[in-house]
Image (cartoon, rainbow, N blue to C red; front, top):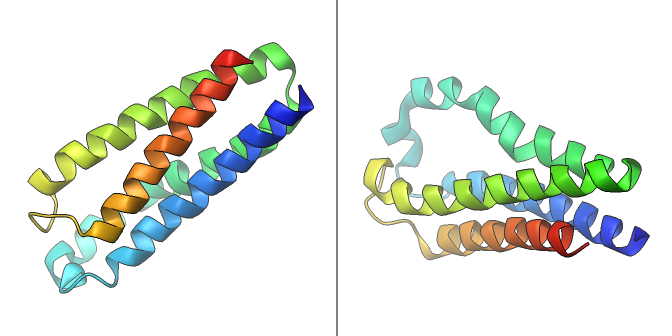
Amino acid sequence: MEDVMIRISVLWIFFAVANTAHYVMLFFEPDIMQKAGADASSRLAIVEAFTNWLIPLTMAFLSVTLGDLVNRYLNMALGGLFTLLGIIHIAVCPIVHISNRPSVHQLLICISTIIVAALIFWYAWSW
């Protein structure tokens, strides 16, 4: 059982780092900061802090400290939620985002976070 808890914890850490890399790589996109403007980034800063760092890193800690039943259901719920949010992000991002086409490295990072979130859900489900 501890093996599954550690795996899920590591996956949450991977998720946080990959999400951070996704937003760091936006700075390397041509003209991204000029098109987005300061208002768009300040408006979503708190949401991004929660979804990219606070929730995943808290879940990494809770995955090795919580009891089995609560741990399992919490990881299933958040793993499933982040899987769906990742799929929605890829589907909606080219439509409402700054550029019409996401770059290949952005797609790679987004797809990897979807896979990691799905693995979190799967490990919790099959636990």
